[in-house]
Amino acid sequence: MDKSIISFSKVSKRFGTVTAVDQASFDISQGEFFSLLGPSGCGKTTLLRIVAGFETPTEGEILIDGQPMSATPPNKRPVNMVFQNYAIFPHLDVRGNIAFGMRKSGLSKTDLNKRIDEVLELIKLPGYGSRGSDELSGGQRQRVALARALIKQPKVLLLDEPLGALDKKLREQMQIELRQLQQQLGITFLFVTHDQEEALTMSDRIAVMFEGQIVQIATPQEIYSRPKSKRVASFI
Image (tube, rainbow, N blue to C red):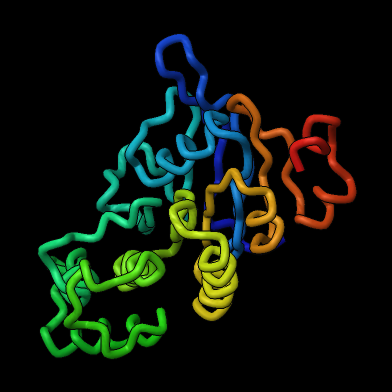
């Protein structure tokens, strides 16, 4: 078994009487493209937010790279998150947006500019550094959001339905690019989607979730050809 980078140990999250995540226990390997797949409201984004530190588990513990995270604030975790709505700052140009999270990094201006140039190359937007956010297409904004997360060189990149706002053609193009980027960098990607095709196309493994519970974890081929239940079969 490859080295585990994220371990969920009996993680539950309740909001009042609603159980959003119910006793999740599984591991995600180093360098894996792992997707949480399920219908809206099944708990997948809550699980992602627990990894990010934006939610605290009601029960259980999460370990990242062997370290328990319950007492670690979001900004001290070796993860970064890309949101569906990009969260691009309108008052900053592309370089300013990408550099935003690096203000306290201690890097010299020269090293920071070099790092920005590297990620611009990585996301296929070299020469776009001085463009304003209003001069970017949806796909370009998504790439800038990715670059801003990647420049911090996290151990895990968390992606919350990051392609949901794009049209079909662009979404399919970005699926390919995201997968290539992940393989090139070797970073663990934890990806949330309700789109079956997206999960089957991109993932090394998929966790299918219904009503807060993880009902099957397997490779796309296995989930497609050997679903564990009628419900998984009809969803896939």
